[in-house]
Length: 98
Image (cartoon, rainbow, N blue to C red; front, side, top):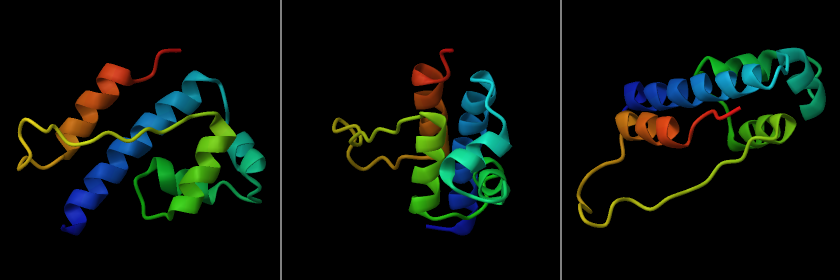
């Protein structure tokens, strides 16, 4: 898996999370405070699609009351890869409903 793919996926996730946060009227500062961070840097990294670890993401999600879910690959086409376009379609289908 190449870095370009990972960066694209993080950007899609970051854009979605930023839309959700803004839709709820939560500032980056408040997310950082709720997550226990002294600065907004982790919030910015997530929303900009930069590299972060799972613990950082989980703290962000808890602070914004956003949940994640996992889904299996389409079994009718098991050789197909899940790509950024698939993620965007899933977000559009399940995305921000505020």
